[in-house]
Amino acid sequence: MNVTLIRHATLLVETSHGRVLVDPMLRAAGTTPPIENTPNQRPIPLVDLPLPAEEVVAGVDLCIVTHLHGDHFDDAAADVLPRDLPILTQPESAEALAARGFTNIAVDHPSIPMTRGRHGTGEIGEAMGAVSGWGRRRPVHRRRHDLVRRGERRTRAASPTRDRPQRERRTL
Image 1 (cartoon, helix red, strand yellow):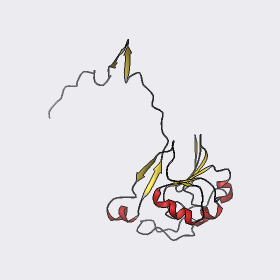
Image 2 (spheres, helix red, strand yellow; image 1 turned 60 degrees about the vertical axis):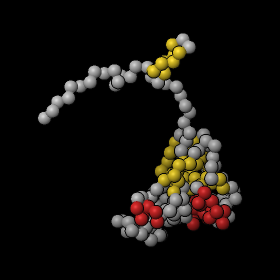
Image 3 (cartoon, helix red, strand yellow; image 1 turned 30 degrees about the vertical axis):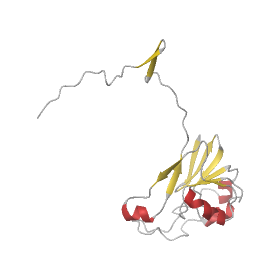
Image 4 (cartoon, helix red, strand yellow; image 1 turned 120 degrees about the vertical axis):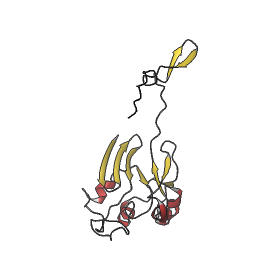
């Protein structure tokens, strides 16, 4: 797997699923007002794209949109992405993406499980709405230190930390 940070939350990931674009924010630097209620009141995006938006999306097989805040999916991305590109997103964002003309939207994937997230705690976290992430399912491997086969019977292997003598506790 090869991961390339484009900027902010925008990533290109080369995976077994092909080339995956995550959270495309593709507008020009400094073209949007700062995010409200944050300490850094500079216009966003903070930096230019390292290559033109058309090159960022070239050859992309799947787009993951974690949520629809403008710093994770913007109008420039909506303009340049093919309408039939598979998009994986959270249920709360699917209808809005369909309203923008995207036709291949999914809210689940057999080998890329969704997990829920939060922007923060308290009022700010609640006010910012739903956010999700996606990960890769890891194959389950038996590890020698977990189970040791002895004939037909399985027993727990000795744990180096459990079998180590306890340190003497000292009081001050």
